[in-house]
Image (cartoon, rainbow, N blue to C red):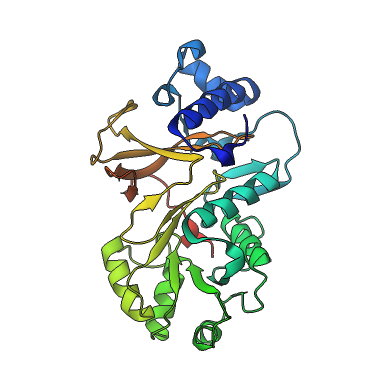
Length: 322
């Protein structure tokens, strides 16, 4: 499949995507059966738009993986008691690490130059969370002695934010949305310079509010002009990042398409709302072509927004980590 992390053009992306589609069709039994059930003529798949996208629900009922290589890790989606959780078998953690490190660099620069503070569970509390794994490994790259997890100590986080900052280090606070809201209510202050990144909704913990309401609440509580966001999921190995206003950018090896909500085989135009399909070329030993339950729209500049979820879809996301 070549080095996906060196993709620099649309033509290179398309070539890699088509090659990966053919590989996963042959090697991934679940995806093969899905493509066959759709009666797709594989030889006729010549464009990215032609590739069949696997509904994300399959990760709840099947092991979506290529071949028989034992996984190095099994990540599970967040969920409440009794919920069926997705499983993502990852056979090569080095690819995952390269993806999130280079994806972070794409938006924020070298993580070695960042101090990371987290309002999430620790790796010991959530050993099967891909989000927590990512944050811990970013902290390892940073190696700042001021890094830390503070979900259980809001007072400790407030004190850490008020400390003198490490020289030449950006400070990033990444947290579950409801945890950021709780912290903002109890410990508001001017913590600049600071980058605040929220990771999802509040289902299961707080009343859902719009992104605009959330950001208008958090910005003055932290003394920042914008709230950043991370868009990722257990079933993928790459993330999109927003540096404000809820508009996300993908790294060069990841692409979002907006499918027609009434015709899952069709796509809507720029600015129109539909279901989010994701191509994640880093997910090479699982399935790179996922039809999510999220609603979104594309902008003319190539950024996209996440607008909510289809009705009757399961509550999911990092807000359910606890």
